[in-house]
Length: 189
Ligand code: GAR
Image (cartoon, rainbow, N blue to C red; front, side, top):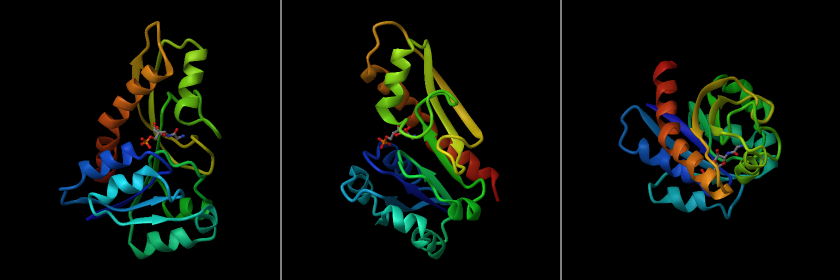
């Protein structure tokens, strides 16, 4: 059994979708959901599935407290789903090619610190881009910078709003993120 931890800071629609996807799976299990925000909706969303949750602060993440829990629980793989803190080197070094993130744009476009959620879609709108999409990538010490695993595109027509772009991108996230996680875990030993 491979065990996943998901880190999320807010709404948690991706986290819930991933928990649901693996709910009955015999080889892969979401065994922890962690958040740096005690008010985050994600905590409610996943509690319905009886997934253990933890709340931690930036200090716990940096000083080894979170890593200790991951190791105690024998977590194999970490999935970021709208997680807004940077993952420290200590965790990255223990989980080489075993931490992934999803970003709501076609990286390298519109990534980096402060680029998340609607800030990304706002940029797409301002630039009058004809397409956008999602990127799933390995996590390194920089924001939105690790090797790209998968991208999916959607085409944008005129008369767009941030809300419409967000919906198109979100649909791609819901469709692809769990499947890509499953593929990676099945390929890795
Ligand atoms: C998702 O759109 C994800 O791509 C984005 O946060 C949203 C979380 O939504 N992540 C980033 O922008 C990372 N830089 P959710 O909480 O409903 O899953």
